[in-house]
Image (cartoon, rainbow, N blue to C red; front, side, top):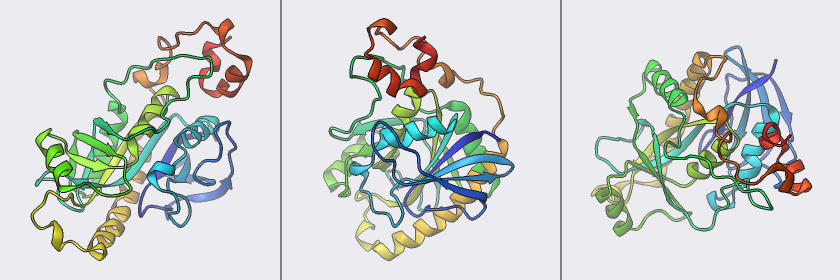
Length: 286
């Protein structure tokens, strides 16, 4: 059975109890090592690949993540859709701790992160106006509602650099801009997934209000961790439900994202680059 669906577990979600027929697989890539071995398993009758984003024991900072290796390895495994779960802070009163947001936009506040497979003699520019797969996001939101969680559909995820949380001035500015949630990891994943023609959607798990909230000083690390663990439990249920609802065939535009994106003529691409990116560009580089 082919591996169809990738799952990226964020803070607090380091494994999924419902995974059966498990095996660990180390996937080498031209970009170095992914965050760790992939757990290949069965979930709701589908073969999936699970990756703990921050590694076993949560050892990798957001700015240290090898995003290219993580997504490239999913592509090598045959994954066509990636569901991500990530802890976020809320920038709006109505997005309460333990709620789940399924964002449809991102805003980049990172610095110097590598977020493309291209370069080294191969130029491509994918469309990214709609950075999340609408079909996969709808399935994720419906699944989250089905397991009884409070879900908010759409919204903008601010991707900050970290690892420090926002200053009060930054938090207030993001609210003034109309942003919805804030996190440290998802934008690069979404960009690379699009380049790899993989559908991407995320469950943003609200653990706390960002520093703008007047009660922020009353929030303790213990409270945040308690919310994180509860959110992770809900996320496991929602992801399992979503996996069971995903259709076999893709009809979205994600599957053909590179069809009109590659600028460099195949004969001008260095053989080493062509070889390394074969899982991603092979069908366009005959």
